[in-house]
Image (cartoon, rainbow, N blue to C red; front, side, top):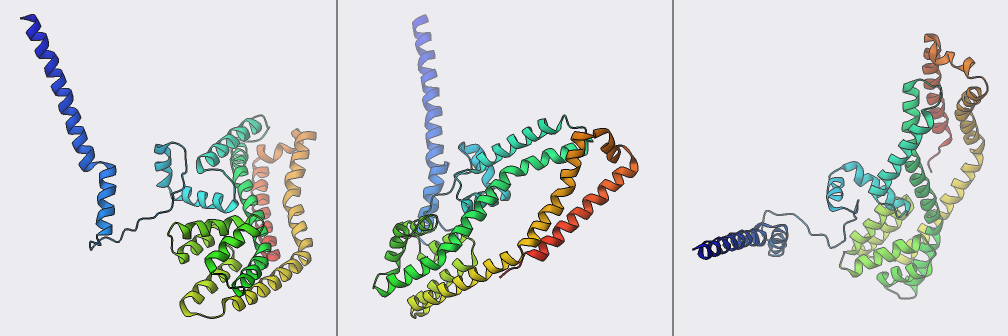
Length: 324
């Protein structure tokens, strides 16, 4: 009797487990993520009306190593802008790595200013400024990379023009440019060539390159190529003219930078001089400078001084930044 009872319990337990597993497999095969993805692709391939979704064959950039954190970051618009900035800078950082460095900079800044004889709001503001250090490094890398690419664009336009005159197709020219020109421009042409090989339309591949390299001169070059593909014309001659225009503009930009060097140096000196003076007085005579944040009149003077510094820096920046 006991053997029959225990056997019945074992078989009942196995039947329940198998039933649950069967229900789970049915649910995954009919309503799971993979099943929905396959159904959506079949519906798009069948051309069913009312659906304008488009499948991208390009690999989506990951914002984090873990899937959960990556999914959360993909729903934040600021994370997409940060990823675009990292992509344009050429750095190998991910959004998660950038956020970790920003958090570490904030912690280091908080520990650094915690011992300074400053009021709490000022220390909190200085600690938050440390958070901008990774952003400043990324923006500096982006500016240097875009400047190098801008210097390489005239040579690339001439190279493409000569290759087209020699009888090469434009897709082959992209591969030749990616192999012959130096970095960082050559890697961008290689990426565009690989996207075209994967089946991405040429117009979309060139627009993706313009997104990775937000330079006006490159956009002129891409627009010329796209217009020539639709309307026809001598693309080699057009690219030669664009190369001449880019060289002339870069020469004018260099002349403007030389003429505005004194104004830029004045802006740096006038902007950093008050901060340097306050720092030196904190080191040499802290009791004397403490009146600025212990006395009510000193606090007002600090706010007025900060406002005047900001206005002066913005004014000088507008005066010396000449867009060409």
